Amino acid sequence: MTYLQTIIKILTIYFTSFPYDHYNRTSQESNFGLNGISWALIYAQQQFWLAILGSIIFIYNKKNIEYFYFGMAILLLSLFLFIDSLYKVIKFIKFV
Image (cartoon, rainbow, N blue to C red):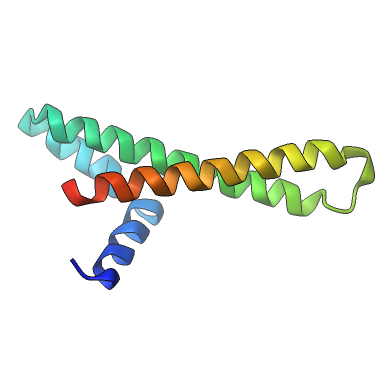
């Protein structure tokens, strides 16, 4: 698999409804192995969008000194979610 195909698959998982469609298809086929992979991809997509939301909150409150530690905690949580989500997608992308 080339790098371009891998990047396209990652973007498809994050920005489309592919994990949900994959889950519905594997549920109809009763393929429980791929069904679990679909659940992992759905969870990774949700983590990604929560990390985006946390990053937006951090950027919005960056100049507010009163919530500095809250912003740093949100930023660290968002970074963790980004890394964990990307790790899961890269780990499970070979089964899609």
